[in-house]
Length: 131
Length: 131
Figure 1 (cartoon, helix red, strand yellow):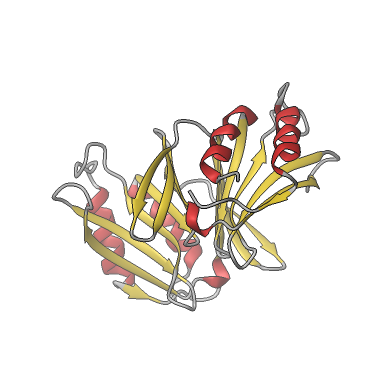
Figure 2 (tube, rainbow over the protein chains, first blue to last red; figure 1 turned 30 degrees about the vertical axis):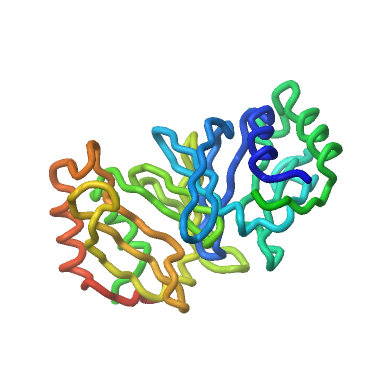
């Protein structure tokens, strides 16, 4: 059964993405390539982590019960967005991963193909095994 | 009565800070100077926003009921941390703002002084007026 570690590592090939973390009050969005993840086991759960000069990212893998691939419509501009939602037990997105374009709607070569490949491989909605 | 717009704008003088947004599952932390905020009125509330090449930040000002200044101890290393917690009605931090050091514990000149000045001016715990 597929797990989140393997999945997140295969997200490197999505190229530039936008990570979004929100709690309903604040929203932080970071542009990055998902790369060089490292892992830690904490009392609260097993974490995937990433660290760059400008930002840090931590995700409690144990909380993620569902992964959902979503195509959407850009709020500004007439083009498609490609997201991956990492949902907790309440079906709320703890983390969203969007393909990031250069100019609006202009994705780099291979980005959409890799997103589609992952969706076809894992399923549009899937439930990760424990890591 | 003091409000969050004025307060956030006076946070520019804190210099380099670390913005932290968490929902219990994911954590995103960004190093930045709080600068060039702009505002928007959305159905969900009045938002303060910031936009750079690498990240975006949005905060629903209407959700923040309490602002708390906190001195703490660094998890790694023997030095003091200086935080500002923006708490919602449930007393959860929608956003945390930490003074960011260069090398661990080495703050830039004026950072701690400005944090202390803001704390003395606004109070260690204060409740913002509606904006």
